[in-house]
Amino acid sequence: MNKPAVRKSTVRKSTKASASTKSAARAKAAAKPAKKAKHEKKPTPPAVIEHGKHRIKLVRDSFTMPRDEFERIARLKARAIDLKRPAKKSELLRAGLQVLERLDDASLLATLNALQPIKTGRPKKRH
Image 1 (cartoon, rainbow, N blue to C red):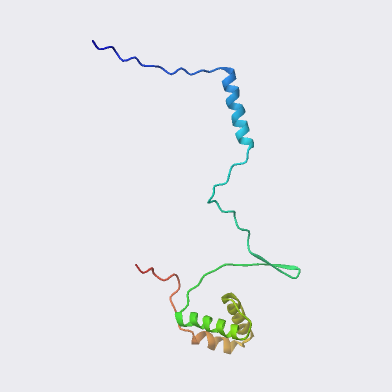
Image 2: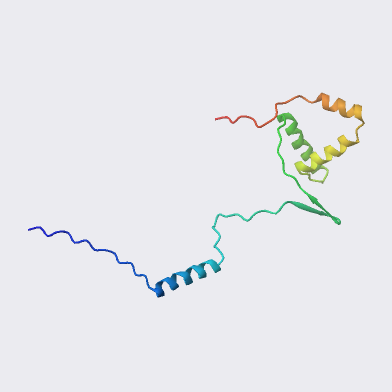
């Protein structure tokens, strides 16, 4: 003879004590600051340089240039090391801007016209 399966029902207790315990636990959890994940990074503040009394905001950008001109930067960095004044790429580019700014209009136009035109944007990825 098979006995019919007896189903146990779950009984939900709704007492005032358990409700107040739950609300107290929620309030306690809300009061605690959330833990940071291990891989969560802090937001970085905007880059700023203190220059005398002035604060200069820095801008990060990227661009495309022909390989031979990019290699010129490496050669200029080597020259700077030989002169006992190591220089970063950004320093060389900033110095170049100062030199270009000193040119008269005709010289600047001639320099710009001598540049090899390139396609703008990112180069396609090679697989």
